Image 1 (cartoon, rainbow, N blue to C red):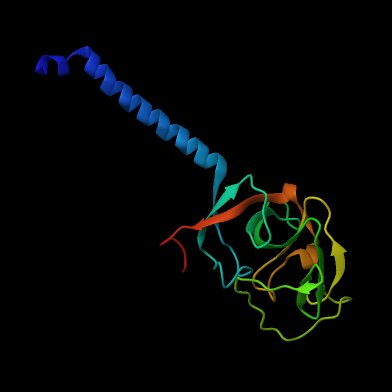
Image 2 (image 1 turned 90 degrees about the horizontal axis):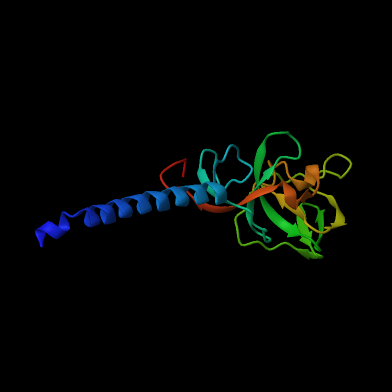
Length: 180
């Protein structure tokens, strides 16, 4: 029986297992690279939910829903990417009145934390931060904001974004890497 185990058929079977394992690992790495994107938070616009320095995994090639955190190509700075939250999507109406975001005529009630400590209300002719005219989002248009409403450069300033600007949706925070 020991002779059979040392036969070339057994060696090829073991070699085949190693080759298949390596091929599977390589295929898995390629798929992860295609669908998963690592990202490091660079600023306070998503504070308190995401802090500068935190490492995130983003899932590419998705259609985001309201409330999803997404990575988008910056409409303001070419080559830059920014992290924002989808507040409204195609077919919704959006308006900001006196620092309150209205989606489809109702004040937004969100399950995530937001920060807004500045009590000043700027008129629309000065800034759209606190007052934004009512708009209806067209097909594949999204209204995005940061979770830190006082600090975020978002759709209130640069307008709606289109679906082709969305790179990916937040999937997971990498534990032990970053500032949590």
